[in-house]
Image 1: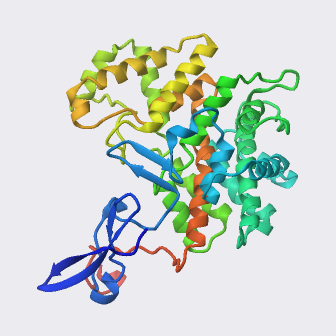
Image 2 (image 1 turned 30 degrees about the horizontal axis):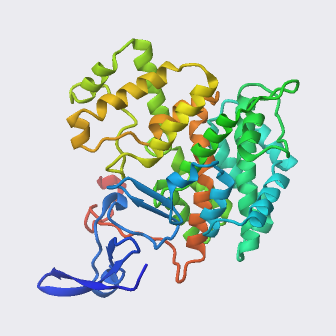
Length: 432
């Protein structure tokens, strides 16, 4: 962000207050109100912080009006071809640039060497209820990593941060796969050091002791894409949660565990689950897509069309376009049809022609196709948000790093507008 290039004037109680205006590299403008309370005892009222920039960031750029998403300046579409590589994207997000071959190979080696869980940690894992929510297990296990990797509680240089980041990114897939296996009463399948990141995860999920799961190139590419497209998304709820916890100088494990808990909320990480439940109900009920579009426009109808519209995007979510193409490639390879995909395609076709949706800028978002892809891989619905967390972890680490090393960083402590009782007197029990 540049130095302030303009100024704004706030007039209140006949007093004129000068405020600096900053301009970002893409032309977005932000009024600096940091001195408003200190100098004038004024706060701003912005529920949900939808109009408040809480930090300066160089990680991710979004233009919701134009449907633009960039990681470290690189358009998200360029990570699709020729070969999607989640680990390369993770490095770029965390360290600010694309790695060279030596750096990428070194990072992969650290990931491979840290795939396994500490046996003590695995013992703790086994004490958790078999039917515990997968996100609860993920949050607990990431937090527990602080007990077994105390050497990473203080991260004051990039080399040590790389070791902590690699352990988190590597072990999270082992935790996720073990969570699924245990819930199904299946034996744990340990990681194979000869397999790439996404293929290795699917191997741990679905292989049997006597039969290794066959991972096609299209399936591996599709999972890489899902993780890449979820890797970061600016100051969303979970990224902000990571920053808030980090601002208290909490360690990386505690901060990322907080990110998992924020993502667990159905308004954040559970959207693709809602999409799948909707598509399944349409299929089971034998409803026509035309009737669903009509019902979605009727305020008195309880039907809700999930997967359209986004808090930030007022255009077609660029991630949805990429996943739609990935669906075509994967299903062509699998050579079978999924009726839910057919329903989704028809709903999109109708919505994009309907003035009700077009005028309101309700376009498909990333959740509309991600669940269908995960379902095609055999991943159950209750694991969808865990997959989201696996993808988002590099973004959380990047957000933690940026917050932790920011010049003049302070603990994040919002103000409030108090609307409770005025000063009141305590009343003795016998007089109440």
